[in-house]
Amino acid sequence: MVKDKITKRFASSNALYICDMSKPLILVTNDDSIYSKGIKSLIEAVLPLGDVVVVAPDSPQSGMGHAVTIHGILRVNEEKIFPGVKAYSTSGTPVDCVKLAIGSVLDRKPDLLVSGINHGSNSSINVIYSGTMSAAVEGAVEGIPSVGFSLLDHDHDADFRASQKVVRTIAENILNDGKLPEGICLNVNIPKGAPEEIKGIRICRQAKAYWEDNFDHRKDPMGKPYYWMLGEFKNFDKGEDTDEFALKNNFVSVVPVQYDLTAYHAISHLQQWNL
Amino acid sequence: MVKDKITKRFASSNALYICDMSKPLILVTNDDSIYSKGIKSLIEAVLPLGDVVVVAPDSPQSGMGHAVTIHGILRVNEEKIFPGVKAYSTSGTPVDCVKLAIGSVLDRKPDLLVSGINHGSNSSINVIYSGTMSAAVEGAVEGIPSVGFSLLDHDHDADFRASQKVVRTIAENILNDGKLPEGICLNVNIPKGAPEEIKGIRICRQAKAYWEDNFDHRKDPMGKPYYWMLGEFKNFDKGEDTDEFALKNNFVSVVPVQYDLTAYHAISHLQQWNL
Image 1 (cartoon, rainbow over the protein chains, first blue to last red):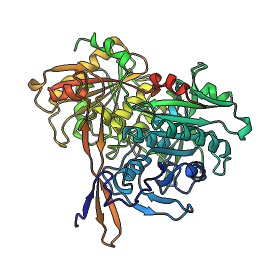
Image 2 (image 1 turned 30 degrees about the horizontal axis):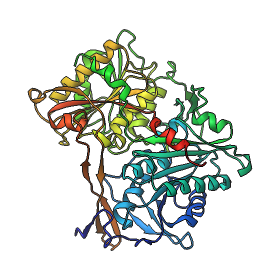
Image 3 (image 1 turned 135 degrees about the horizontal axis):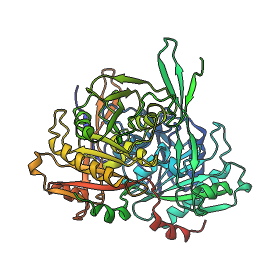
Image 4 (image 1 turned 60 degrees about the vertical axis):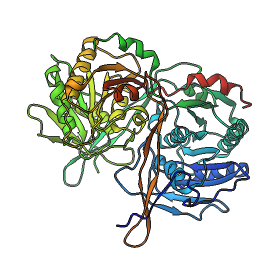
């Protein structure tokens, strides 16, 4: 097997896409796959704002969290599915897509990364399981202003009109600012419903909640047991400054999300241990 | 297909394992698979401290982050590989293992969850990609005092003696306290070397770093392109209170890790936006 070449970070000579330098460069990804309605809606929403490039999974990757492909190969294929937009599907996870975009597809750093629009909520604790949000977190780690968008509707033909308005507003704010505060990305969740039903946008904190997991226990045709994961979302946080509260009251929730996971408040407690 | 039953959370009648109520219950998992030397070393280290149950992946799951299996089935098999210890391999990710342990294997909440000992570092930004640490984070979300242990040595036959001493010390501290501060787990990394080379244990913050990703671009026998992910770890944080600094100076690093990802410091900035 011949090792052809190693593509350097934003190495213009090896890049698959030569960016239009006159416009903001916007990288689009998601976890529901490049063939979902959510990513099409997201592309439509940001297309008037810049030079849009899509790098997204070729199959659904929900619940993949921050998984990366370190012991397998990755494929990248150009897709002619969005008129006038360069798009690449990959065999990887959402985080792989961001890494491939930066390391192999683009010849410069994007001005904005948008992920989604997810079919289903990524509020509260869902942020840690979400492929949509992990792609945005990876963008932030790479120093790109990044946002994950999710609509509280799992329907594959969901109504993304309200979400598109929200995407446009938030993307314009970031492009006007030129940045987000250092070390963060945004987790944006949009209530289900028509645009006129949305009451506004609120900056929130992540509600304290968890999934109470049950398992559906079955037997296969050979009599061998297997399990399906079930789960019930348990929100035990009644705070009016949470994403869950905002969403229940028909507001869009925006949570600034950080990838420095250090619990600074716990350091002094641990320093009292006998280590 | 007959739906046999739904196992309830810690439902004693359906549990695969009836716990010894007279001892602390210790759940062991990892991401390198149930057949790795690291998990065997971890089991040996905690065995004198309680009733030990192992639920771990049946194949390597490095880099799986917080992935969960929501669109596929899960298998659980009893494994007779650790004398005197109940052990189950699963077809799932590290986070699936924790969920299966809680939802199907155990009849009560563990007093301690330990994950690892990982073959390789999970310091700094690696915490977000790590299956080892994601299992510990999932334990914390479920309210279980949880710790991920990683040795800075990828060798499958690495020397875990120093790590075992560290595991014992930290596990004893947690069992004595009966808890960890709310909403956190611990990310413990151990320098490579013999026990006498370790200078001590330091409570640290996560160093600011990232992976600069390159891709090795190859062609398959059919002439179609594919990629292998490469990467160079870039630590741009010179702080002496970081995990990277501690490890470089032969100290064990302990970082308290939280799953509330809200960047509270960014909320006021965002509230000034025109939304």
